[in-house]
Length: 383
Ligand SMILES: NC(=O)c1ccc[n+]([C@@H]2O[C@H](COP(=O)([O-])OP(=O)(O)OC[C@H]3O[C@@H](n4cnc5c(N)ncnc54)[C@H](O)[C@@H]3O)[C@@H](O)[C@H]2O)c1
Image (cartoon, rainbow, N blue to C red; front, side):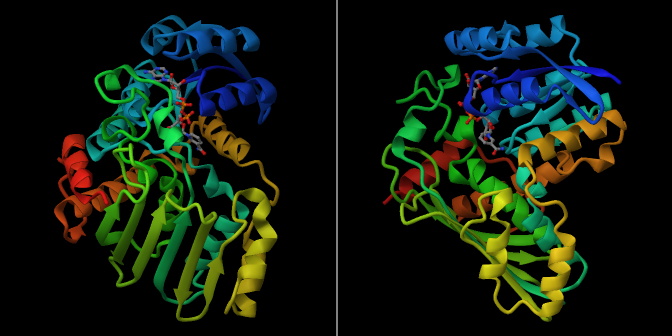
């Protein structure tokens, strides 16, 4: 039995507090103990009170924490633009990293993260817990087993809603001190995009995981539909071509007060799957069958067989997978590693480039456009 010393960076924030609580709660997993040593956050007051409650050390500076504490792993739950520098610093200190989604905000950062993982031989997993949703696992397995025949069309509709306050009251970062609001969300330079980088990235990851072949090109259009004081995208449409001739369609945003939709529709020559309404996590399992149309008996049967364990706690499954890779010293078993995490960042950046250029983008492409350029594009396109 090994004792794993860990810390949560961004530990006073929404997601980070949750991770810190869970580290304390789970205590031991897979026959090993987990010791939450510290939390780190730039927000001083929240940091001190949360650290006191958890009875752990408090650090304002992640570099100081990495220097002083000998940590086996860190959980990185900070704003998107610091995912890469924090992950790389942790890797240089020999600490494994569970880094929140999106992996980072551009492909330069993604490639630096990949290099740091390889150089320091650490385990790095990206926070895509929906990969453990039994429904999604069943869908993916049915597709890869060939149950649907040749998948010629893959559609995704993602409708969520976020208020203006969600952006304007997000936790402050010093880098935005000269902007209208200091919060990290809704700024191109700190969030990396709006809905695309934050909420939709989960479902873009699923979309790419389901897709029968790598992306060949995207053609996208986007507007700020209703968030008057926010810089970034809240509604985007994308036509996708895959290398094997399949096509895809994505319509997604956080401008939808009309109700939540997280729908995938997958059409093959032998069968089709349509999922939706209620797919909010591990417990939405039966809905799939209510909503499934055209699924042949063969598909239904094999889907059931392929779903794996039900009622799974998704975060626990994500963390256990990360811990197992550390324990077994086997990076191949990580569900979303830096190579997989890079794919949704590439997809997002391809979409943003297509929006900026107003034309189809073929993969791979040069990712050398900046946050101010995206800001200009979206200012011109705002309604
Ligand atoms: N996997 C999921 O379902 C899920 C859900 C929510 C959030 N997230 C991700 O978690 C991350 C944080 O999101 P959130 O909603 O908790 O945001 P948040 O603003 O509530 O928390 C971020 C915290 O990071 C701190 N921080 C900022 N810069 C820092 C730095 N340099 N060093 C240390 N701390 C720093 C902030 O002070 C804040 O407390 C994002 O990447 C987000 O996409 C993932």
